[in-house]
Length: 349
Ligand code: PHE
Image (cartoon, rainbow, N blue to C red):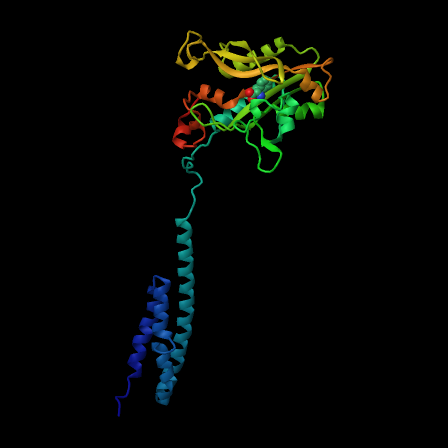
């Protein structure tokens, strides 16, 4: 015969510890452990006692049965209440930990800025816009007609050579070698009078070195009206160069040849480094070659359907990188394209 169990004393410890264990649980895990300890289906101590009611004497059962069931109800209610309070405490502390203090200053934000070429381009078009030039654009892939033929460049001209021009494979097209084809496009479409600027990328099949890149940018200017003269051109370019390099910038015209202008000129700016005294940067000439320009050739006007007897015009084309190198004091054009942030961030006009 096994020892008869002392139900009263078992009940006493159980009822004294159960509710206490619940209120002492500090975490949801501890609370679950307490639940299993008392109400677990297999080994729960209160579950066990309730299961044992059938082994008790009638008298014991009458005494303990209602109390044990009442404790079970109370325990379940208290477990539920404690679970809710632990859960909301966990939520609160999670929220507190991730709270954003909107009054704090923001962390330092890396500031971007324009690339020197983009910035130079922007200033160039800004000055020309104030002089009344309207923006016009053309495609990078061009026809021979617009890039050469319409510009009075003969079929045997060296610029058409494979050495200088990128031609598209299997197509009668090329990458424009200058922004001048936009002249042809615009004059054909709009006739005279007109005053446009055309910024954009151009391509030349040439070896890359400190001052040459196969891809670079130009800004084209074109003005067609009645009685446009070299004097108009010189005034505009003088203002343009002073806008870019400051009021002391002086220009001179040197006779030169481009098939699409007559007369043609190369425009020099007085050396920005030695102010004309002569230094290595200007090869001791006191002048720096800056752009090509001239009066639009009558053949070009005619090609575009504009009567050269009625209208005349000037055109110019400026390399953007050349200006950027001078303004930012960069010694090598490749520094503008390698996109080494340490270099770009150090550049200031
Ligand atoms: N298109 C010429 C070049 O790329 C520049 C130029 C433009 C010259 C307009 C005269 C007139 O060299």
